[in-house]
Image (cartoon, rainbow, N blue to C red; front, top):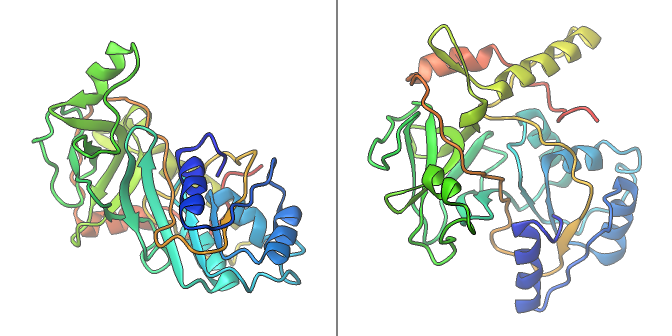
Length: 301
């Protein structure tokens, strides 16, 4: 993670607190990253999904010494199921964490079982509460039902929360309601109370009374292109598995391990009144089946 990213600077501070080592590349390069892992005996990788894709897909990966890596964390976007499995097979980590949050509040949720529950952003982190409210609502009490897609909101009572946007009353008016921060991200809670992030409120497409996430369309298009190249490949994507433009910098590692590595996601204030679609587990399963999973490739570069 780059140092201007909330997880980059916090990881640097954490390494200082536990007398660890922080190794950072000025500009990410898979070959250079593999050399650093071997030379520095890196134990913890913390990257966006696109960079994991570049790392495990590099021609030097099979011969590289990555045996020191024991814990993985990712940030910035959901990781497609196919890529999750490739990364887990490649590193066999003791811990594989998805950390969802933002610069405004830092930690929203943590999923320590990223590989076993693809697409899940997990449950609220320490000193945090989250809710999913109905799309278009500006009240934190308009709570969506399980599997109903809505806007993700977080409690601002945490010491990690910001107080508001600097000289941005318009931003405060859109994002701050009743002591809760409206992230502008869309998602739903499953039967176990785990959060799945599906997209952005302001990106939602309403068609025929249905809310359609651009991320789902993107996954389907990527999968269709892949299927044309390899007709035998099976495709399916977990909910919310969208891609992030490749980061230009920073491989972040630590030698002594952080117990909860993870990832912070962007969250600019946004809200929009949209028609609400409640998805039962069965209908969501049908909807996911229209997407694909062998599409483990993030956005093509």
